[in-house]
Length: 144
Image: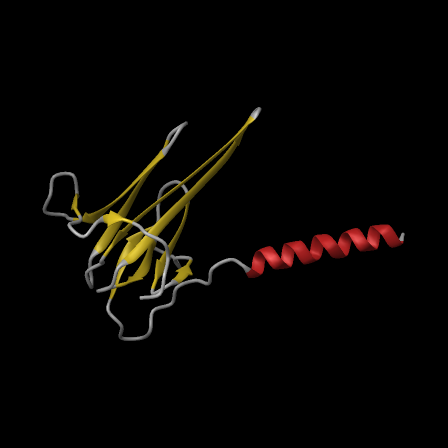
């Protein structure tokens, strides 16, 4: 009986510690300039701004606010369990979102690596997207 109780306590502590380490949802300061990130597609998305990681808080339309005017590091983590195999993939890019602009995450998981690109949504283009000129590789998440 005592051993079962100890095991339950250890499991509860591990679970609580894991949940406590999840990044908070990003909530912009009222009136602050924001862009919108299309959250549809594969993978768990998160982003870093000013040295802190955030989980995008999606709205009913499938978008999440991003802070505009500063470099944001966007991360996508993908994991799938298949018979006899576990596949994990993570990719990261950075950009400087423009206020009012909508962005689309294009994440493609493949067996040996994954690819991540962020496009500007652009209704004037035939494909509905255009290249984001500030797109760059992402470095470590550090405070400026």
